Length: 135
Image 1 (cartoon, rainbow, N blue to C red):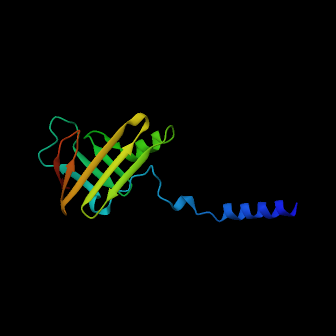
Image 2: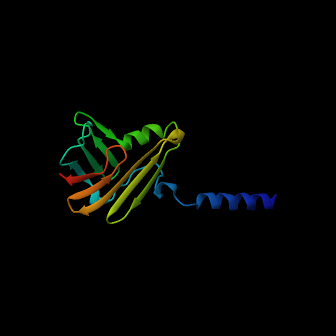
Image 3: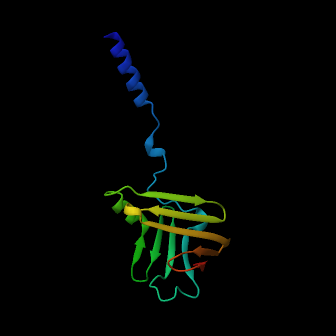
């Protein structure tokens, strides 16, 4: 009986002393680097698409469609309730890449290269390669 009490005490201590999960980075959140925060637009437009620009915040990438916006943060919150979503980011002083893996093998990829303080280069399969200016 004494061994069981000691064993239960050790287990309770191990569980209560485990690291705080709330401080770890969630794998379903977006965290763009500070240098890319703000609104970006292509000076020559986006061809025949309805996209008018991109907005980066500390926790979101938003596609500006003129009359509406598409928030990846909102999409992640919605879809993470029904399926596992994985967000992979690579961040440096001059590059930012984002990959979001949704259910059934659907992925969205973004890659941005910082040219200077007001210019980034967006490598995109959907919109082509674009030079964007900070607004």
